[in-house]
Amino acid sequence: MFAQIASGAGMTVVITGASLLSGALLGLPLVAARRSAWSPLRALATGYIDIVRAIPPITWLFLIYFGLPQYALRLDSVSASIVGFSVIASAYMAETYRSGLLSIPRGQWEAATALGLKFLPKARYVITPQAFKVTLPAVAAYAISLLKDSALASTIGVHEITYQAGLASRATHQGLLAFSIAGLLYIAMSVPLAVVARRVDRVLRRKLEVA
Image 1 (cartoon, rainbow, N blue to C red):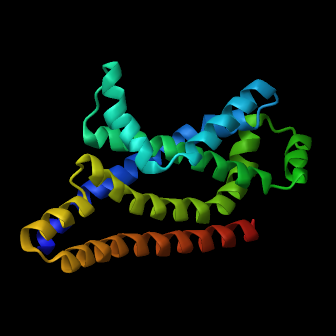
Image 2 (image 1 turned 180 degrees about the vertical axis):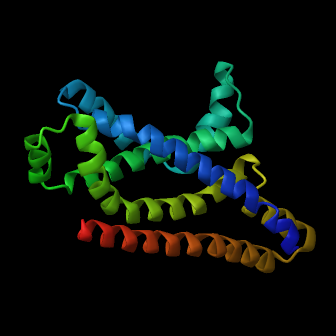
């Protein structure tokens, strides 16, 4: 039974990793739009973020997997899961980035400008390292949350951990054991991620304090 359920771990990691990476990239233009001086663009980005976060993840999966085929856009269950979770992740990551940027004292921006730094060097060498330190714990927490939410992909037929646990439960009639194993697998993947994130956070804080 364990081997069958554990066989879904690879798909869980793929969906979580691909969705987090896509969401992290899509969150960059979103946060730029969210902080834009042009009010229509800022309102559009804010509306997108609020709407995406207001709709439950399982509803997004159903909208994409069952809804899009009505408009001749059919995705397989894995692709639909990654697209759905990426949309959700983009909104959460944009807000995480925004909170990181807001945490930077205005004096840091002004000091970098006074040194004659252009926007890209200013962002790369002054603002981003400080914002990354602030946002890392939130990103790690969201990654763990996304790992758990990936279980919802089982509802549209993705063969990840929860799906395999359901198969094992029905085949052996040992639901408690099957889903206990699934829970332990999620713990085994989540805890190392949290530990690594804390260690990286401590290292970054020491380096920035020295700098």
